[in-house]
View 1 (cartoon, rainbow, N blue to C red):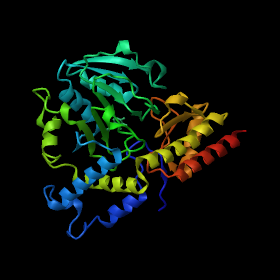
View 2 (view 1 turned 45 degrees about the vertical axis):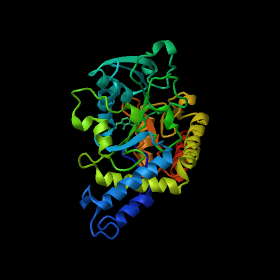
View 3 (view 1 turned 180 degrees about the vertical axis):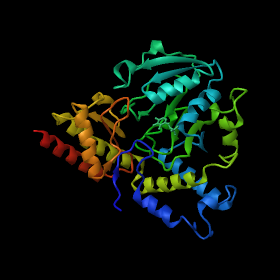
View 4 (view 1 turned 90 degrees about the horizontal axis):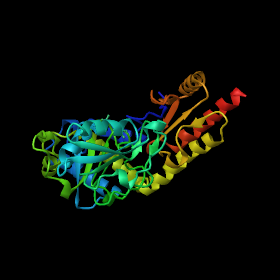
Amino acid sequence: MQRVFNFSAGPSMLPLEVLEQAQKEFVCYGSCGMSVMEMSHRSKMFEDIKNRAEADLRELMQIPDSYHVLFLQGGGSTQFAMVPLNLMNKNNKADYVITGQWAKKAAEEAKRYGNVNIAASSQDTTFDRIPKVEKSACDPDADYFYITLNNTIYGTRWTKLPDVGNVPLVGDMSSSILSEEIDINKFGLLYAGAQKNLGPAGLTVVIVKDELLGNAMEFTPTMLRYDIHAKNGSLYNTPPTYSIYFAGLVFQWVKKQGGVAALQKINEYKAGLLYDYLDQSDLFRGTVVKEDRSLMNAPFVLPTEEMNKAFIAMAEAEGFVNLKGHRTVGGMRASMYNAMPVEGVEKLVALMKRFEAAQK
Ligand SMILES: *Cc1c(COP(=O)(O)O)cnc(C)c1O
């Protein structure tokens, strides 16, 4: 069976090379006579897999020694609670910028534990942009300032970080980790669920500055305390061992591509192909303001719902799947994570051109 071009927003396409390597090692890893899935998480063999994954991620993202890297479970959504439980610990308040569903959910969860100030929101324009953050709307006493770096559903991203002074910046980068260079030093905490750019679902990577650890709210469940996981090297309990192993293979693949800077160039090229066509098309239209366009997720629409349906059906018949947009935006969404080859986007644009020509 032929592999399709999978434009899913997540779980999403993984590099074929990595899938094939995992397949080769599926039954017997190295010389140990068992699958990674069957290995004790306390074994030397697994310890090496985990340590190598962490070292490679540190190298790829230039993570300083003053940050912990944690391999946790519970997806991005568990971080919506872990962040306030662990960090809303001085003045019991935090600033949030609402740029879409994920930011909204994170803010709602944080409200259970303290005072949430909405510093800015683009809800009134259906999240078609990153809103301006006015200094006067920010709380200088906030325990942290929360943003979603790439908005998976609406297709926007922060290209310039807000000026937050000394307030620790917290970023959800579930859908953009390893897709473009970022300066970790600007953040107190960053996190990402694995299923978009890193590997199978089940793993959540948290990168947290050491000085923010150790002040979790008194009633925080043990499993939701960053300091417990940090102290135990992500082995307080059984971590998602296979997902960590797989993410480790993806990190090695990213290194082979030339690292994050090289992938960013390719991602800019891929996204550029699609956006340039959207800008010149008389039929297809992007739904996001140009300056805030995501490199990973590009939503676009046709003039009528019937045309959207016809295009999605035509695409599917030709091996381009999961192009249907999120139910709150409608139309189409092409997710082009690191593993989407340039060829996939080139062929998608060619298909769109054919569709447009056939309408005339
Ligand atoms: C997918 C996603 C989430 C939710 O992740 P789960 O692992 O399903 O909890 C959160 N934030 C962003 C930006 C996402 O893209």
